[in-house]
Length: 177
Image (spheres, rainbow, N blue to C red):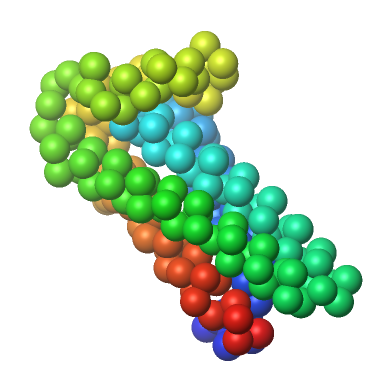
């Protein structure tokens, strides 16, 4: 169980959120390159959201942790709370993407030119980092892949929900530290 003191330490929670995100992307890349799990546009969009969320959480958590260690508790709390806001927004966006993929896109043989596909294309992510962001499956194919009997987008949704919960704790409880 997570101790009450840990919950009050916003920087630690942000770092934990960032590490969970990096671990999730590591699992996705292992599944892709070692086990042939092909990502669809919604998978790639969620991957981009997770990486952005993880980077912000790690950066904010590390900086706030450093401020706390330097005896600047108020500045640490303010920074942690400030960084929790974009993490919350990204976690909500990720939840929407994971839910849409599971409930709607997974029934489609083609998810080309959906919102996810357009975002990935507009951001140029496939050209920027093809090993990370190359779309190689349609949504119905991607939905067929399972990890411990659950589709990957369900796991992604659980990660986003946990990130949202942790960021809300940081936002709402950091002032009590």
